Image 1 (cartoon, helix red, strand yellow):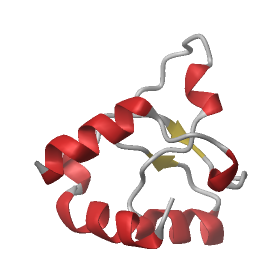
Image 2 (image 1 turned 180 degrees about the vertical axis):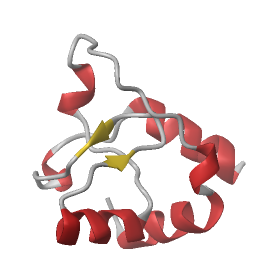
Image 3 (image 1 turned 90 degrees about the vertical axis):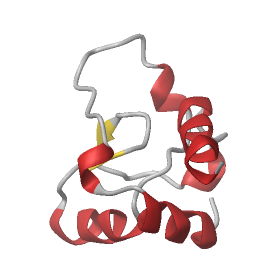
Image 4 (image 1 turned 60 degrees about the vertical axis):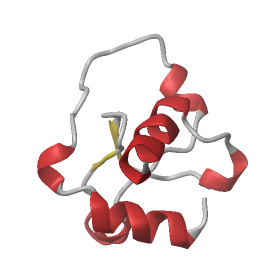
Length: 83
């Protein structure tokens, strides 16, 4: 995911519009790279606190997102915001 995409998401998605999903689903979200506010990624790297993706996935990033396809739900939400 490019830095430009994260910068735009950071500017248009206030924290109040994230929807945490703490349910234990079938694990599909583990196979994708997710859109997250850029400053939250940096904060998580320093503090170890979890981040919240546009789709609501909550986790502590520890993998290279470039090795995974973009989460379809994050992508749809992002495109609607940029609409």
